[in-house]
Structure formats: structure tokens, C-alpha cells
Length: 431
Image (cartoon, rainbow, N blue to C red; front, side):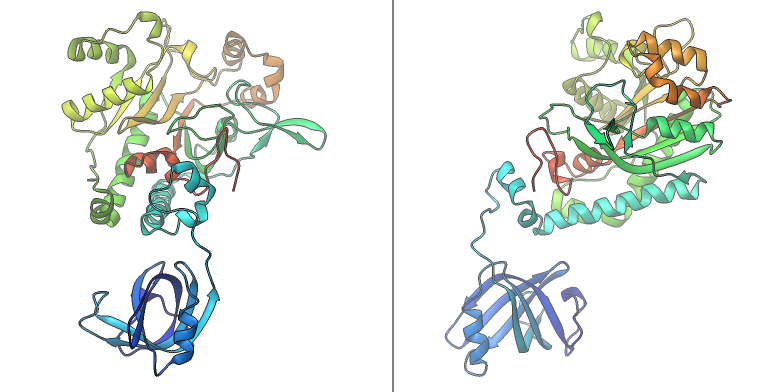
């Protein structure tokens, strides 16, 4: 008999249902089993006298045991689960579950140890349904706007962040690294004349960070565009893309997100842009917080949250661009602004967290080589990367956007551990 998902069952339909035992209730003449699958729940009703074998089998069941039933769905108005109950004619115990080692009150680390059980919750499944759709519409935008999707190597001999916080691997006797981002290869695509590219792929960062927003293995969305005049063109693309993505998610899942997570998805009409130097002026004038000049190279987590609160209050946007960072605090490939100490770089913050960094890149071979040396990196070790710029390369820029972080903030999750299928960090490499 053909299996049917619970939400698709029609009254008077004969079919097979399969799923997990959520509850068992035994009365004098009846046994009631609440069976759930990935789409919903249904009450299975067994008459003890009529189906003695099923009754004996049901006694062996525990919560989260897996069972299949053949039978018929019938209308029963007194049944709270959709007014339908399932009357079985065949029962098969697929797997009997031991007593579960975790419950809703268990600590985060214990839940991570048994992530496969923790993911059985409806809320967990919904997180990944939303994430699946989010990645789909992220791709949709770029495909509809003429971008080429690329898949860059994740094993390389060079480090995109200058050599820090990388995982070294033995690659057929050579020393290699897991890539920190596809940055170099996106720039290679610009030198190849691809003009507009994007990728959804893995990042690997060996930072020993134990915060709610850090992970050793992340999934990010990158894009790069060519023939631009400034980093504001990159922000223009990201702004349009981000508003598109939020709008699509709100349209499809907004009501459910409000019901389950108590979060209202707010779609801005425009994302405000604030210079980094102006951020510190805002802190002083609006909040009475004075940040020493030597600490004005970047924003710490508390400052990111504060400027996001400011953007929401004064601009009506939960997202904000912070731009024109000091060149010394950004990657060596960021293009400097003439006659200043700043570079054409920016961050996009959303609901208190940094989602991505972005920049216009330096495409001039000699200048880029000089900037590499200024950052304390041996340019000889970067010769394969530098080669991309020796034979003609257009101006270009792009971003690397953290999808794990985005989903965590979108749904106000306590940590991105909840938005990642299996989290990896300094103290976690299992399961």
C-alpha cells in the first residue's frame, strides 16, 4: 500500500502512514497512538478486542519508536487532530526507541551531543524549511539578474585572510589549507571576464571563539561584480538583494514565523548607510558614549547592537550599512580611498549582528603587491594570487554574507548553533 504523508490524508482514504510515536494512551477497550511525521500528527485508534495482536505490539512501544500502519482514515469530530482518526488493518514496528537521553529542558551542549534527536522537534524542522527557502530565493535573485554561479575550491595553497586562523591539511604531501572564503577565486572570475558571479559555499575559520555567532565551519553567500566606481555600487546590489530575500521570506513564512517564533519580519524600503567615523559621533551625541580614537578601527558586538538599535529607531530599518573603515583594519585587497587612511569597505549589520563584510577591491598589480607587504604578508607567497592582476583586470567588489548568522538573527535564535545542521567549533567535532 502506498505511503501518504499525514497532512495529505483525506477522509475515507485507504493508505499507509509511517512515523514516530509521540504519545500512547491505553484505556479499557481502546489504545490511542498519536503518530507524527514531518508534516503533521494523526490519532491511530486500536480496538483491543478486535485487534489483540496490535494491542500486544503497542505495549512494546515507547516515545519516538517508529511505526507503520495500513488502514483507513475516517471522520471523527471529537478527535482534536483535524477531526480524523486512523483505523489500522496492519501494523509494523520499524524501530523501538530506548529512553531518550534529552528533553526540552536539557542544556545546549547535551542537545548538541544528540543533535539527531533534538532536530526531531517541529520548531527545528521549521528552521531548516525556512533556511532552505531563504537559500532558494537568494539564488533566485542572482540568477534572474544575470549572475553566474561558481563553485570554488575549498583546498588551496594560499590564505585569503593573510595566513591567520586557518586549518592546515596534508594534500598529497604538500601543505595546503581549507579556504577561509572564496575571495581569491571570485577575483579570478573577475579577471576571467565573468563580470557577475555568486556562490553559496563553506568557509573554514580556525578562530578559537566561543560566542553565539562564531563557528569553525560556516555556509556563506558571496557575490562579486565588475566595472564599478565605488563600494556604494556593491551596497546597491546587496540592498536590493537583501530586501528581495526578506520580502520573499515574509510572503511565504511571515505568519508562521510570527506564530512559532513571535518575530515580525520587517522589510525595509531602504537600508541606511553610516560612515564608521559618524557612528562614533552618534554614540557620543545620542548615547553619551565616547570611544577613544585608538579604538575606532572597528565595532565590537555591543556597539554593533547599539548602532542597529539606532538605525531601527531613526531610519525604521533593522539593517544598516557601516562604511569607510580604516585600511589598517581591513583585508589587504580593499581599495584605499585617495588621500585618506580609509578604504572602500563596509559591513552590513542586521538585528545587532554583522552579516557580512564587503569592499571594492584593489585591481592594480603594483598597488596590490604593495598593500600585501604593508599588511606584513610576504608577496612572494601570494604570487599565484597576484598573477590574476598582471594580465588585465577590471575594477570589482563584492561581499561574503553569513547564512548561518542570518537565519539565527531572522528567527531570534539564542545561537547560530540552532541554525546549523551540525555545528563545529573549537570544542565540538562530533557527531
